[in-house]
Amino acid sequence: MADEAIKLGGKKRSVFIDKVKEILPEGGNLNLCLTCGACSSGCPATGLEGMDPRKFLRMAALGMDEEVLSTKWVWMCTMCTRCMYVCPMKINIPQLVFNARSTWPRDQRPKGILGSCDMALRNDTCSAMGATEEDFQFVVEDVLEEYQEAQPEFAEMLAPVNKKGTEFFLNQNSREPVTEPDEMVPLWKILHLVGADWTYGTKGWAAENYCMFLGDNDAWKHIVEVKKKSVEDLGCKVWLNTE
Amino acid sequence: MRKTFGDPVAEDLRFVVKAVVGEENFIDMHPNRSNNFCCGGGGGFLQSGLPDERRTYGKLKADQILATKADYAITPCHNCHAQIHDLSDQLDHPWQTVHLWTLLCLSLGILGPNEREYLGDDLKDVDVFHPESSNM
Ligand code: SF4
Ligand code: SF4
Image (tube, rainbow over all chains, first blue to last red):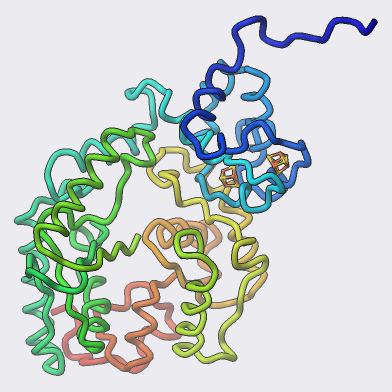
């Protein structure tokens, strides 16, 4: 008779990885790891916090929830999905990381991401820098007017706001209207030259969504819904996000 | 781009970049396409208050860019732009980091003097559209 198998972590094991398996298609293949290491060898986050994707997955599989759910490494994996791409078993490590993020007490998650998410929740622009509907419209109209005058070839160029029924609803990263408005112009010029039918919306114009990175599912959903509603209320056909 | 829309759309973008800068001036980094590495700006890393770890993560990307010996790195989104710009900054600017729209407008001859923040000295004064409108 063989000796009794080694037991890890006592009776109650692996609550976290089991929960994640339940919500992912095919369980994210989370129990199919061959321990080959292809994931870790091409992961730029390997070594940070003494962690790497294979180790993270193996620790979760061994039920080491305390370590897995407390390592700061989950904020250093960018969820880029390269590991999953090279994995022979297509194991969804980035989703495991995302779900680990979302178990952190909200106020202990990285302040910068938290602050950007909370700022975006403040008003319907969804701007992580807190730019309001009025701020945005003012900057766009002001910059457009300057360029129409200074570069007469573009006197007819438009940067519509809240125009109904256009082909494209264009999002804009907050950084431009807030800190470098001139950087919006080259894109407007290209859209003008190709004759694109497009608009910004005062609601939901901001392209970024830090609530997703924060692992805050409800807030993430809220942000996406506000943006979606804005696109629908204007009756635009295609929602273009440049992020 | 590659992650969201897949390699074929990234291939279209290569066509655009080559058309804009000239085939002979386009250098792909290695590895590329779906084997490429994330720059480290994504997933909220830029805002996470972990600059040392973020730069360590980005070293792989910085080395990739340096290996091309290219003067310009074109980035597709703001996260990448901010991160790759910062990586270059840390190394005393061996490359410039630009948005594609900047190069598109430059190649069309419609890039004004105030739209050149990210061009290097080699291109800052090239073919300026309405130079008199500088700092209007
Ligand atoms: S690449 Fe996949 S199978 Fe190989 S160690 Fe990583 S997760 Fe496991
Ligand atoms: S998703 Fe995370 S673990 Fe996977 S390769 Fe990217 S950074 Fe590494």
